[in-house]
Amino acid sequence: MLTDPRTGRPRPHPPLPGGDGVGPAVAAARRALPRWSRLTTGERARRLLRFADVLEDAAEEFVRGERAGTGKPLGEAAAEVAQCVDLVRFYAGAARADLAPAGGHRLPGRESWVRWEPLGVVAAVVPWNYPLLMAVWRFAPALAAGNTVVVKPAETTPDSALLAARHADEVLGPGVLGTVPGGRDTGRRLVGHEGVDAVAFTGSRAGGLDVAARAGVRRVSLELGGNCPALVLPDAPAYTWERLAAACTYNAGQSCAAPARVLTPRSCYERTVAGLADAMTARRAGADFGPLNNPEQLKRFDALLDGSRAGVRHEAATAVTEDERDGYWRPATVLAELPDNDPAVREEVFGPVLTVQAVPDTDALVQAANGVPHALAASVWGESVPAVLRLAGALDAGEVWVNCHLEQTAELPHGGRRQSGQGTDLSVLALAEYQRPKTVTVALE
Image (cartoon, rainbow, N blue to C red; front, side, top):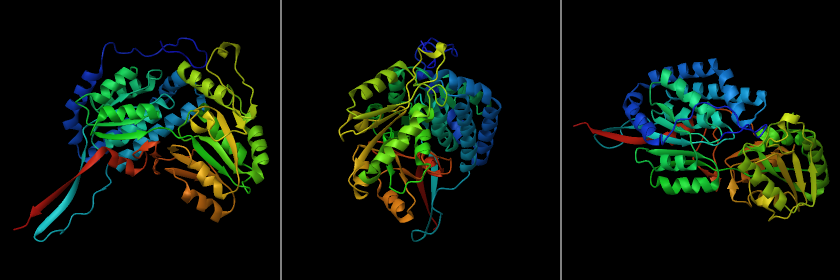
């Protein structure tokens, strides 16, 4: 049963295939692979551009599907669908870029060059926080590189992935982009299927470890969450609090790269807590951001906050209608005066919460920021250019923002380190995640 996160009640949804659809979906992708992979890069690009046009024409339908499963505000859902269209267009163009080293005379009496070839059938297992956007992050570069893709959406949010696959059948051809809705067992069967050549997974660390074990020696790309630090210096701009609050509460804080842990020197700790408390409590669930996604996430979120030993807690009000009171709403919250081993610090809360901790001085900021297993993204807030650049370079993270947070574009890479995963999303670098090089050397005699 699928529920509406805004109300907690059962919701209408697209027809879901019965039985185990993994085998048929993988078989269809394998049948489509020779036809799709042998297209010239120009023809593949043209088809992806047509697919982007179809997605854009159906934007209202995609927005309804996204909101049905996530409860996102209209503006958020519409902006994310527009990003998806832009990403498909970006990778349509990137399909025609040449990543290989130039051919030439590398050995005596020989000419050599490198061919970049698709991996084959890619299984993309994507989460519920950005159902369409995370699917596009995975399937757009994979398709551009000549692979076929089977997407396994989250059990609570299959709507937009099913719709995308339906349009893909018409524009790209049957089997090029398929969808297999279902729960964890469906995902496990897909990852372990012998007809799958590579796996792209976005989700929790526990899920990523399970995927890696089941995938074996096949190529695996993992994005496993962030618990991202925000380093606030004494000269942080006045807009810091508002921007951090907006980034933290976007999508109800259910973003892997959202700011989660605010770290600041003791000299400006009180100012930081006061500024964040004012900014966060001004943002209301139901007015400025949506609900948490599902009962399981709600239970995990509450357990982490109940287990927190925060000395001070600032909590916003909610702005929900009577019809929404049984939904999965939680207020924007600031937790201050926490010990280093507090569960809200050590684990990714994945909700509209900022923890704030004081460190002795600016030299201790990096040690505290890098002191958790996650290493996905971070931000630095301050006006001294040498200071912020020094910290940005010292942070162990795949993406660092200065005086902003959670701002991304198709042209710039995004990827985790350490326990936040491996591989690259976005930019032309993502194409290499779904290709393999073949060196060809020809004797000239």
